[in-house]
Image 1 (tube, helix red, strand yellow):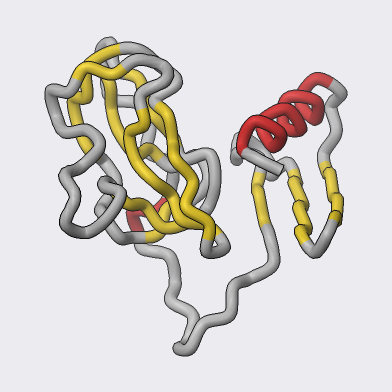
Image 2 (cartoon, rainbow, N blue to C red):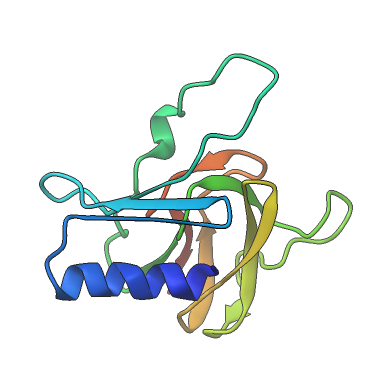
Length: 147
């Protein structure tokens, strides 16, 4: 199952006014649950095994509203760890001022030990890098701001 499959399921949930979707296949479990009020749909999976105590989400982990003006946010399609580059010594995929198209890879989000390339899905110029490299991000959280 890839990101396109998950987005298709979310679209079907919205279209058919479903509030919960669960599936399990080959050890992969996916549960989507529509939040209360205007909260986004929550994507949850089995918690990864960690060696230390669980850290609470940072105060800035809530989805950021789009800034005033003609800005669009590139939002995280999943919960995971945000990386601006393919490796620590590689240059970032994009920087402020970089022209992006819908197919431009802007970052990687690591989720369940899988590196997921995130595409801009919009056209414009990167105006701001909102997320912090190597830090956790939430579903729907702004990663970049594009004008």
